[in-house]
Amino acid sequence: MLSQRGRYALKALLHLGRSGGEPRGVTAIAASEQIPRKYLEAIMSELRRAELVESTRGWSGGYRLAKPADLITFGEIIRLTDGPLALLPCASRNFYKRCEDCVDEAACALRRVMASVRNQVAEILDRTTLADAIAGSPASRALLDAEPVDPGSADTA
Amino acid sequence: MLSQRGRYALKALLHLGRSGGEPRGVTAIAASEQIPRKYLEAIMSELRRAELVESTRGWSGGYRLAKPADLITFGEIIRLTDGPLALLPCASRNFYKRCEDCVDEAACALRRVMASVRNQVAEILDRTTLADAIAGSPASRALLDAEPVDPGSADTA
DNA sequence: TCAAATCCTATCCAATAGGTAGGAACTGAG
DNA sequence: CTCAGTTCCTACCTATTGGATAGGATTTGA
Image 1 (cartoon, rainbow over the protein chains, first blue to last red):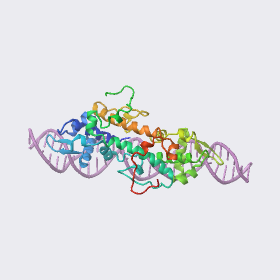
Image 2 (cartoon, rainbow over the protein chains, first blue to last red):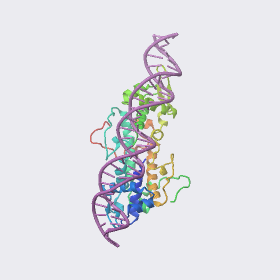
Image 3 (cartoon, rainbow over the protein chains, first blue to last red):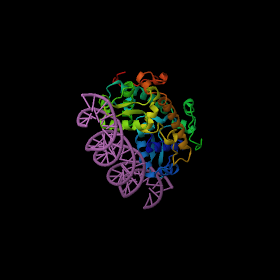
Image 4 (cartoon, rainbow over the protein chains, first blue to last red):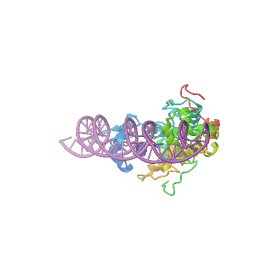
């Protein structure tokens, strides 16, 4: 599961994506996205340090995306806020770490499966951009529409 | 990422799958899979309560799989030990929970993407069984072989 | 100069992950 | 019938982390 922090980051970035190039203040974003203001402040600082957003201070300052929304992928955002996409460190590409206790094939059988999961997840998240999500027309529609999630009737889409 | 607990559970179950129907004691499994014995004891208890394994006590007792290895999927194991496969509760099928603060499309744009990820992950994990992993010939070889993970040169496969 | 904004550091709290301890209950071998 | 080896159960511990708040320093245009 994503951390709340990660979810907030994604919501905030999607918000900025929808706001054109205009700077949006943390207070405004927090209010309209239902995020605790002070907490969002910290998150936006992190996003700035990661150069996903740019900020202007003072007067009518705020944050805006540092690049076009179609150049910012879910993958890079989530890796920043939540770390590896993979289910195991040994199946991660960007955060690879060997399992200390990996001596027999059991571990490797595991790793094979986990690597395939990682590949599929990365395939989606590294190809889907903020712009895709906003437009509602993701890069790989075939994948995204494959099998709709249907949580009762609670949905706006 | 999977919890250590989940990883241990998977390793132990794969171990049992490789052991034919013969009961294996916790001590033996722990030793050969490099898992703290007492901790594994707790995990095996949980797996028994979930009816993934059966136990016999006393003498030459131990644990064995409660069903054939080709009827136990990674999906059910991981859901048991680590909860939802989805990245967000609102994108989960088995653990669905509405996001309290979900009012505008941002959340739904998010959910669309996360749902597609969930579907792909579940597709793999619910179709891959212990037997598949052990045989090294997973259900959907096309997927699993799609893009091999290459962590430097540290690999036994 | 003032209000509004980002920025920075420190702190707090509850929950969880990971693991340990100690022993009760069971069971076949001897 | 006892004993060693096993599962089973309850409780506990400790470090880390997630999620957030507090308070103020700094910047900047109106």
